[in-house]
Length: 202
Length: 202
Image 1 (cartoon, each protein chain N blue to C red):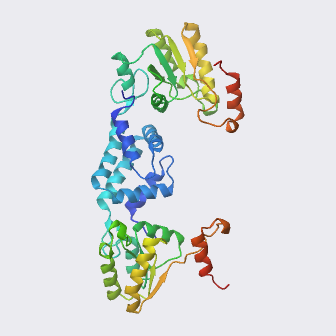
Image 2: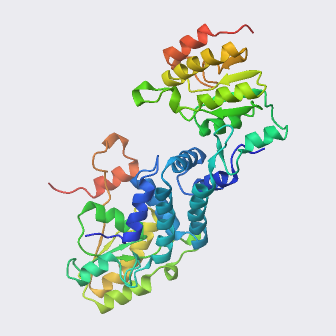
Image 3: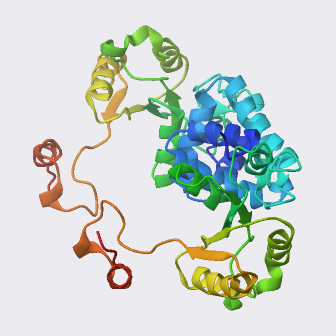
């Protein structure tokens, strides 16, 4: 016998399907929404629909975009970013992470994943053809391979560097090493080993 | 210079406003929605609107309801629950918690808060008049005061018991004591003290 109205139960189920949201978090959110202004809930609902309606892939770099080009590519066309420095990432969310650092003023290319034979993802499933076309069509002086520092990301970076280096374009990889602010004794051995191998003169 | 589309940023802001959702969780959810089927996102949006449109307060017990009466009161009218056993709670969410235990087959009354002079909430802000009217109109043999085991909840329970006991209705309070499965040495002193005070013969 349910103690809860159907609509509330359905909304609990919908929220519990979202990543990182368990039944307790879903309940907290649903009761918060029930207590909130109708306009607030309406705006949340409308924004969800609006995002799904308006967001597509940038036709140049495959970042999320509302127009043909994403905000980064638009800024590059307006000469507000360095279009000769290209950073290759796996997913649009990686762009958000890099932009937060305020350390990169170039443009991006989103692969749409990483090479992972286990998951059946080979080079053809990624936007590598489009990347090579961009490198052929435009003047790029450096490609930063910013795929993840794990097996799939390293594999993808090695694969790409073999394709790009022969074009005479400088190819770099994000540095691996100790996280800033972390304790040396808490670092895992692979990371610490990499940090020793990549040590720099100061 | 934004690296993200406006619609995505707005949705990130909307999700980050929900309780328990920080910027990182919001990002995870938004990227999940961007990758999900349009129909899934649509259903989430529609369910939010539907809940705000259809959910109101049960006119008898002030639980959330889609009809005039909530599912619990409807079950009681169909003689599927014990209408002579009444549990008084602060909020509708407390009903969900109690129902999960499967230990209570009576009906509820939601106060809509607890007496808290600090927050300007006195007895008149709660549904106490309606509770007393219910006790006068119907045959209730026991009232379980299930307000929270904190200062406001205890104050409210004491206040209510002084009103209800003179009516000749048995008035009980949820037991306080050690959480089941917890370690005695980890219990806070107030809880442990209460557990000793309320010890039971076995």
